[in-house]
Length: 141
Image (cartoon, rainbow, N blue to C red; front, side):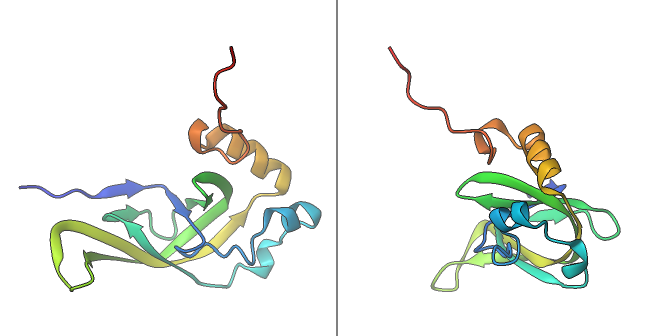
């Protein structure tokens, strides 16, 4: 019997998992770039990442990504401050013997300027999850 642990170099979060979409909004960022100085001292939480995951810990950066309806938008770098892996219990408090969730805290250590953000996302996000690449449409005859 073995165990499964993911090792991630990217903190990819939905808003529900802790991405601060109220602070990091692409439209606002393009109009007036958000400054790292405005966020650098804040500690943010993430929660309910499925499965057991290990992230590089501060002082090593991880890429920082907002998952917007399955599409990835890279924002910069984050430094993981704490990491917790717990059994994922069902509504009755039972564990299925295999499901885990990962939570923790992080601080934002770098924010990409809007032009670089788009360029980096286009280059690094998987094609099927790239925020700037339109989803394929049906075949035309």
